[in-house]
Length: 171
Ligand SMILES: CC(C)(COP(=O)(O)OP(=O)(O)OC[C@H]1O[C@@H](n2cnc3c(N)ncnc32)[C@H](O)[C@@H]1OP(=O)(O)O)[C@@H](O)C(=O)NCCC(=O)NCCS
Image 1: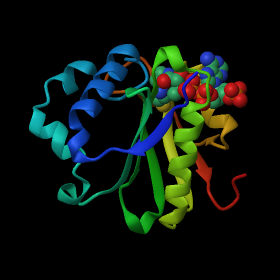
Image 2: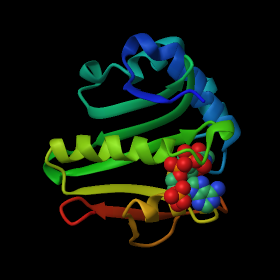
Image 3: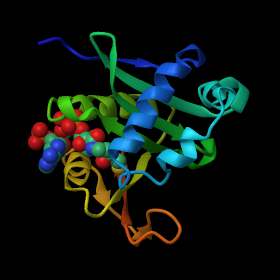
Image 4: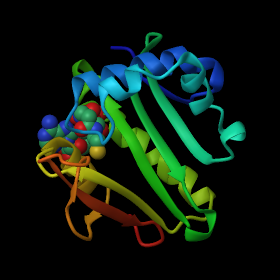
């Protein structure tokens, strides 16, 4: 079987990114704070500018996993405030047909290496409490639950558990 490859998305990749992200929102509506309807309404210019990190003046690592030229996974690392030294993880998704092959773990490893290189001492994310696959992924990668449960989105019955991993003491 072919190997997957991971690379950083650039503004030129906006159509590929749009397609993969919308697929992820349609496939896994309970996994993300955002919704398919919200993001399907974005203009092409908005998709393009999402990946224009210089224009947005943000420090982020937008990753895509590809196999045979197809997008098979996504994940973002994002540092909101450099002074806080926390790298947040968003948009983690792997194509259903290719789950269980280590793609998400590899995406996480890449974000961790990037976060360490940026001097972060913590990685943070939130996972829907009913999402066993993702919770296992994060636990087995060194994340621990912290803080109170929060609504997935305003008014949602679904709850998310914040999780963190300390980078200096992580395996
Ligand atoms: C969660 C998700 C990203 C995992 O992707 P993946 O590429 O299949 O994960 P990996 O193959 O790298 O698995 C890594 C670890 O995750 C856990 N895991 C993955 N799938 C699992 C499942 N179905 N059941 C239980 N644990 C699972 C295991 O601990 C696994 O380690 P192991 O193989 O050594 O046991 C994928 O299922 C997905 O895209 N789900 C829908 C979107 C989503 O929930 N995103 C997370 C938002 S917070």
